[in-house]
Length: 130
Length: 377
Image (cartoon, rainbow over all chains, first blue to last red; front, side):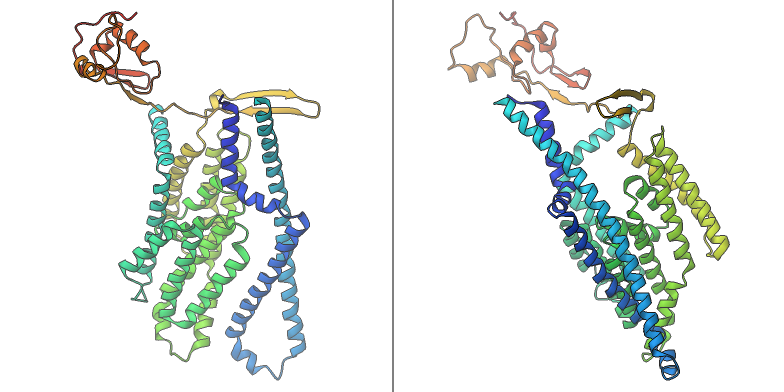
């Protein structure tokens, strides 16, 4: 006997699994700390590479000035400034990614909770049917 | 309104039926328009400014995710930049890499926004973007909108400064890089546009999520007004030479597009809003339920009534009740067709091929003439 409610539930769940659910299931496979740590690590690597690109462009733009003042300038102070900028950029970006990934994990878990609840409901439909 | 709703349902039905074909066709068209716009505007590398290459690339994009369309468009633009000057391509590559590494991770699914934003800018209708994104996407999409605007202004700067770059000597590598970087960083129009669009997206998103009647309409009108005001302020402060006529006309067009989006995405009937309140062990619930405006799609059912002799010839081998009338009905979509046909005969329906369209039934020319009908037992 066809159960309309069961079919509607199954359709919704299938749609979820093929849409946003796919991403959420992937996130749900991680522990919270693992998921956040992975994203923070990626963010650190990406921000360091981006800083390298930006610094390279800056150096290309100011290469002549840099060479002219190479013997006059305090190289240690320059390196300290560069490191400060690097730490500020990497730190700021990492904090941002930490907040975003924490929020995403919480949202995915909330969504998956609803999905698993529906799964249980579907299971109970089958048991009731037998 | 009913006609429009019926049309919407029909479009939805057609889309769900032919989705497998419609989506690749749209992707193909979008990719083809993007590549042809790039080639027509830039066109420095004549090798890729070829219809066959564009068609192949667009066809490839039609079966791949939209993210790869972004990648392919970036490759196209970089190749044109490289043909103009290697230094320009280097700066362009750096900008794309920074955008990919830092920003795309916030909204990786908004690749379509990144493609559409520069495209709509080049078509002089960019004001649709913040309102449509605010209505359809989340707040994270501001990153994609910002990236799209940055890409458009980068390409425009390359196009505008191409004559200057060509006049520079080959050895002036650093000059070219500096020229490009300063051009990008000092582009006030880009910064004003990014700021205005980001604020508009956020305002539209926040208002359309509010639990007030006509929130979508309020959101789109407010968004359009805020966008115009912010662009005016930006123009006054930084003298970015925006054409106010085009801003106003573009905003009006954006409102029209937003209304169409609302019709397809959020068509509700506020006059039938219901507010209910109930409680369980843990919570009180204050629920506001706004019904969607829907109409059932008219279905067309054609019942063919064959002539008696044809059917008799077919059913001759079968044993028949001699009292049964010597005719039969070929039925479509009815398991109890015989019983119904009897009623139809009584109503005179047997004398005509009946075409039922929704609630309205129209009579067509009769297929047969039934002279010897008898009441069914």
